[in-house]
Length: 337
Ligand code: NAD
Ligand code: DAU
Figure (cartoon, rainbow, N blue to C red):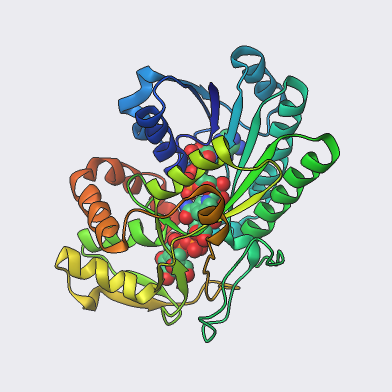
């Protein structure tokens, strides 16, 4: 199988490339990635000789069609996206270009050149949020789309396009909507890696609002396993929710990280809340469990230790990121908060 992985130099895409090389060594992996601020070839360094890497933009029709001409992918897994909610609040436009138009270009290429499966890596954020005082409520695949941020609106738009290409053109598509991931190679602008990096540098840990917002955390390798199952055994035209019933308030995550690193709780700093901040995400993964037998394998206690150890042992990976242009971003986003 030739598998085109878009966004393979990012956090989840990079983990997926490593996962596929380890678990499906006879497949050919082609990575197409624009290498935005979030893309990092160091993530793929150890497997570079086993993949084909192409630097390119999924919204660049000519470049994408050329990839299909040259490599005839059987399966396309689209991770490529602008993925950070805070950045989408500052500057929505690139989110629309990459997440919506980029998806459309990929779908057109699949239609013209033919594939056996197009898989869209989507997010639970398309469902909006749940109230904090209703722990009995969960997102199912039937939950209406109801987005909050420009990021989630762009991801929801892409999902609708994917479903339109299934219904209109019969393109063999699947969509997965996963909860918050954590693990190695996570860009240090997102909650868990940011807090680990700041704690290790004895910098304040900026918690939005009161830190009571809840996210449903999944170890990234469990997400990769779920996508592997969906692209091989999932039913065409279907949406699969992915999540592991591991809900935690942000403040509890931050306290856990501090205690694992032996750093003082006094580093916690409450800052102005995110605009339109979603309260709670919680996935009901019954469908993927019943249909495909998927269950998460890494508990949070184990996963967070592996993750903290990874950041301790791979300082050069994240220190290079936070010493570059990321510093301007950090000052802009957190300077006056
Ligand atoms: P990321 O920001 O770490 O990586 C995104 C990758 O896409 C980067 O390598 C970047 O260079 C590349 N990219 C961006 N624009 C591109 C373009 N126009 N053309 C080609 N490549 C481009 O993101 P992530 O956290 O790994 O998320 C991957 C996917 O999973 C996204 O679609 C995101 O919406 C979805 N998702 C993420 C999470 C999470 O917790 N991180 C949870 C559920 C779903
Ligand atoms: O649910 C899936 C989504 O998870 C993905 O679709 C997104 O791509 C991914 O970025 C993530 O979105 P979140 O907004 O939930 O993740 P983030 O790490 O940005 O924030 C997690 C929570 O922590 C959220 O409630 C905001 C809060 N937070 C975040 C940052 C960066 C803070 O309190 N302080 C911070 O500095």
